[in-house]
Structures are given as structure tokens and as C-alpha cells.
Length: 114
Image (tube, rainbow, N blue to C red):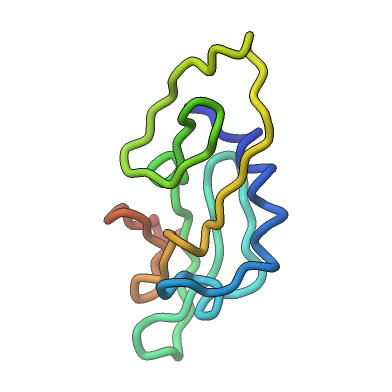
């Protein structure tokens, strides 16, 4: 599944997000970035002293359901039925991406250390 268009819509939301349900924003560095389908940043470990740089594959976190981005596990796409046009859609990554002892994670999928 290709997410660049969908991710570009979500990227602008990250700086203004409030932490909800733990999230990752308050325990990870502000120098996060999205490259292709990967969210990358440095996050604090459980002891809060060490930082680990990881990359989370957002294909495991975000899906396209009838032209709407949805947080979901094991994502898939379906035809929008709108002649190939996909309207604007966004998700708040902080609602479902967490810092798991220094590793970004979503729905049990853990990021890779880089």
C-alpha cells in the first residue's frame, strides 16, 4: 500500500497535536520526520535517560477506507468509487502511535532501530 499522499496530509497535524492515551509526542524528540511510509524519531527509553532512533512502518498503522485515512492494524485499500479521486483526509498519529520503551509502536507493531 502506498501512503505518500495520505501522509502528506497528516504531517501538518503533528506539531499541534495534544497527547491522548499516552502517544509519543511528549517522550520523543521534536525532530521527527516522515520518509516514504516510515515515521522516524528519537524516543526516550523506560529510564528516560537514553534515546533510541527508530523507524515505524506506517503501513501497519494507517489504512484507506473509502477515501478516508483510518487508524487500523494490518492495513488494506479498497477502491474509492470516485473515479480515482481521493479527497482530503487526516488522522492524529499521536492517538495510536506510542513510545514503547524507546521504540515507536502501533497496534503491537514495533519500530526498527536505525
